[in-house]
Image (cartoon, rainbow, N blue to C red; front, side, top):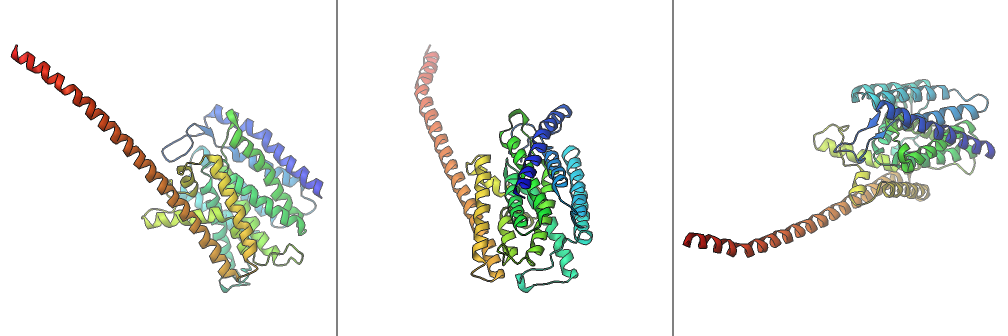
Length: 388
């Protein structure tokens, strides 16, 4: 089985690795670029169809290595991924309105929940709920999928961030599915991991083949990871080995802590400022880190470490507290950390402003005294002319 996992990883990696340069070449030929503007952190035009390579690696490698009956729900998962693939392609090339995109996202989420049976039916006591009926399960599951779809899309703002965190999440879920006997879901997770490794090679160190995943990639990632998280939550409840996680919603929160915290924060700020929660801005967590002086790779590495630490914390605190208290504590601690990052950014900006003001003041003083030395000479010339 371990050889199968390795072959799966290598196959998905190879599929994406050899597809992306061709995608970049086509993008250059057809001028399919992400054009920099005042809101974007990239300063040069970069192709945005890297998500095509991720999609090919994920789907083809999954189909190759899934054994026997892949399960009832997989057909709907792949159908939803194909829907998001074409939505992302259109948005990356022609731009799709937010309303149309949201409408198709809702259809895909309903497809997964109602037909694919990817439903959150057990909350493990979170908020006092354990087993819930479809009246609660269906709308909550749809909202969860929509939220994660858009949250992953929103953190795709700097090199390596969305792909790096998605790689961590998919690999963790893959290990869990593998050791709990759910090989098909493990296969899909490892297929995504391999494709993301190949994408990161070109996204971070691509040179003339540098590429962004675009909405094609981020929508696929959000759809897949949200669905897999739901499946994990449900299968964990009937798991009876050492890999049973007592409070799986806290574990899911730990894995998705960056997109969840960031999205809740920016949505709240936008609504408080009278704007649409989907109105773009430069107030995301990765923007704060970049403004604090970090590079793209440093900021992505920091947030990947942040994710790992919160995931370990999530696994630890569930032993000592109730799920509702633990969930609330983890989320509150994350917001406190983000607040610390924000105030650090503000201090850096204030220090830079003071230094610039000081330099400006010195320049003014220099010009003033330089001008003062010239004034007597000018007066002398004027007076001599007048006398003459």
